[in-house]
Length: 456
Ligand code: PFF
Ligand code: NA
Image (cartoon, rainbow, N blue to C red; front, side, top):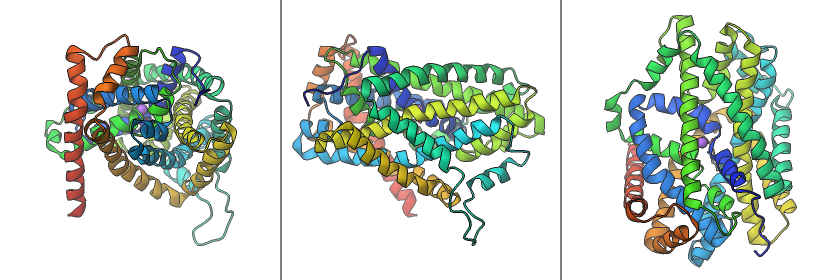
């Protein structure tokens, strides 16, 4: 494509890449994943996965997009005619994620409004059940879920931003959302750290269970978290970097994105566990008893804790859910852009049409997840997407690029041509060994182990 859109500034690209990376995965997935998989000991597999898979793959994806100037399907097609399907597969995963990711943002949006008068009451579990109810069981009541209006708002914002394009839409949105998110979140973390019992929570969070490192599941969890969290193997980072100008420091950009995402993850872990420690102290329970994963943590436990805050409950409730909304929207925008760009490159249609078609389809499907029944479906989707979708797509991606098409060297040269940080010497060996050996071996072993344990 001759007139491919471009980011206006380098900061614009970095903010957009960080906007994609920093999302619900950081705030609501990371803290409980780390806690359940060895606590302090989880940082070991996590760091290993970040340094040997996360950042090397991020550099690879930035380079692919920059070199071939296409969405994932087009970039893979230009890498080798035979592998366009790999791009479409990743686009398909991104598409599925978008359908449930949007729903969680919609819930957070409702909850930021509920926070203003603490309308979730004292039985927050029952309130969530009520909120997700479409009709009484067995009864043909109202078929309009309460989440419909926030869901429509989420889609209106996302599609509105995408209609405006790369520079005027995505870049501008991230330049507003990300700084706002960081400020809101810092306020929450500072407050969290000064609550009674914060130390209790941090102690539980960082306490290492070294035994956990022997379990394959823990390593799977670490890789899964890194892939999901950095938005890699989803075709997104390839798409975003296809809009970079010719001279771009891609290697450096990848380091900045990777470390910012992990820094935010750590910050979220500290914030969330300080708050859980406060809760444990209030209830005279252990932190283990108050922690809950995923949906329960954000939408049941948090409202309950906010009820017990010493002061400014409404303000902190609002800040927490508003930061979920901001983090989520900037990620959703990137997910949807992935298939919008794929469709646009393939069928040569206008952005408007691609957004209407791709975004519209996802919006309609997301309605399925918006109901009580969809809630169970959501956990199942998340489970399979992370194990089989992401890990497998990541594995196939490195095997194709490194071992089948054998393009690691030219890609390295391309990265070095445009970047200030060069992949030579130690950095060069680290990059190549990570991609050619460590990542495929670990991911391959993981897949094998997963299939084995799923069979018995
Ligand atoms: N990286 C985002 C997060 O951590 O929440 C989630 C995400 C964004 C996943 C984009 C997948 C994706 F394509
Ligand atoms: Na993330």
